[in-house]
Image 1 (tube, one colour):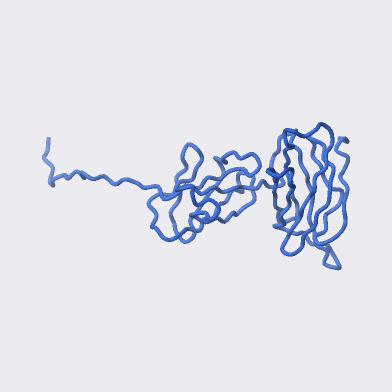
Image 2: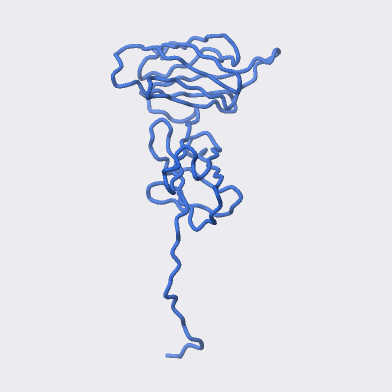
Amino acid sequence: MSAHNAPIYFDDKPRVDEVTFAVVPYDSFSGRVVANGVKAAVDGLLDRPIRNFSGHLVFINLPLPLGYGVTIDASDAGYLSPVHATFPSDHNPAAARRLMVPLTRLPSFPYAEATTLIRGVVVRDSGTATVPVSDASIWVAASANARFNTTSDERGAFALPLSRPAHGHPGPYTVTLHLEKGEANRQFDVEINEGKSHSFKEPIKLPGNNTPEFFDPNQP
């Protein structure tokens, strides 16, 4: 056995990686963590996160500025992207080392068959044509503690999933649909059938005063 040409030194103080923070992407409708198809990057840094078994995207050993800007791309998972967030979060400063990021489903998301949905398209009347309205906020407040939100995509299309409160009565029920983009906003009532997908017959104008009807959800 040949001797070593140089002595070998062992580090008595091995490096310990320190978690700076973890991005927790979750479905804003179901509340479940989206474990696959999500990427995250810290603005201005080349560091990439480590995905743990829970689906959290963990950043380690980052420098310690006052805060980080984070860009999340969840398009491969079927969610509107990119999503921008900051850590620490102004909305939840008590959640040490965790950045909770709600994700909004794309209109093309493969919903379960029995999901209650409102589908539509938001447009702006330019005088000579209608133009799709992207990034419009669309929501329904089903109760004081339950609000369902979505956002229109680049085509103006949206799909808003709803979940009826447990104390609701059987049969159709009425909800108020809200739409907003900048200073333009409007609302109107629609009748919903539980477990059905409802699609408007014509685009919703924002601003505007048209109240389009649904296609008959009982028709195939």
